[in-house]
Length: 399
Image (tube, rainbow, N blue to C red):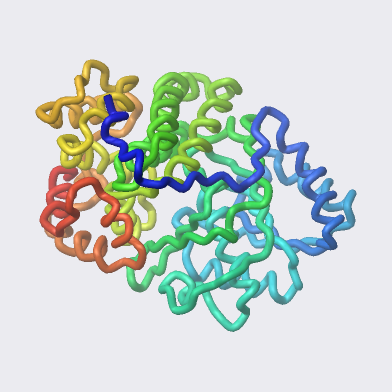
């Protein structure tokens, strides 16, 4: 049993700091949220979002009504793209500074929310820019209040202290983590997710699965991260096929949102390691690569590398998608193939080559994994030594 692998004398820090409203109709809570903000003296906000989802989901109608009813003025930045860049963050920050925003509202998936967290910090440091923030040129200590309306079920960023933004000219995709960027309030409403395309439904769900597989196997994992891993994978295995078949099934969307949320709590407590550290160079080099797709293409190879060191945990948490694992070290190939088969059934066919990567890219990708700010921390959390040879082998096996 995996319990035997936990050092009961190693003190764990268990985190949970955001207030999340989860359920069908939760978007209506934006009225209460705005009233609370108004009572705190906040009457000017910047909204950070993408091109269209904030409107077509219907979320925007509720937000503008709540703003009007509470006398809150706003300025809108809708230029965030998947894998957002430091330049987009700087544009949004300038708009917010010129307007005098007192809080930041994000509507969207991980990209708008992470950009909004970055804007919330830079609003407090107007002499700095997003490159300074993501190259760790200074250490911030505060941010404006952050409110999020989540439109995907994968990142968990609506409940955690992380943000990721790309620096295009360096092909870096670094992350930051600060206690003061936990969202003050977040909304997880399944009714806002029903128009998520099938491929994105798969990719974001695979992101959640990766979060818990990594969090459950880091050097600092805790029982709560293993417990949430078990439940996240069980829920995704059960409800992802239903959501693919019937995108408007609110029960499926509810439990995929819940799975994503608890997965965010899982890695907020125990961090991540190989799969995310190696995916960030992939989408740093090719920004059009969907984050969850990149993770899915890497995951089988990562599990193959780490299985011998975490066999009992992996056999337990992977049971819903790879049944029959006994938790013994010589099952690494079986676990790898089992995950690959499940991913293929969900719509992610194996092979980085299909996404335009080749053998000649491996050295560059490996170097980026080690030189991109913050990724070294993730690699240090891996359950086996993260040498350049190991990283390169994971990439090679994923080709």
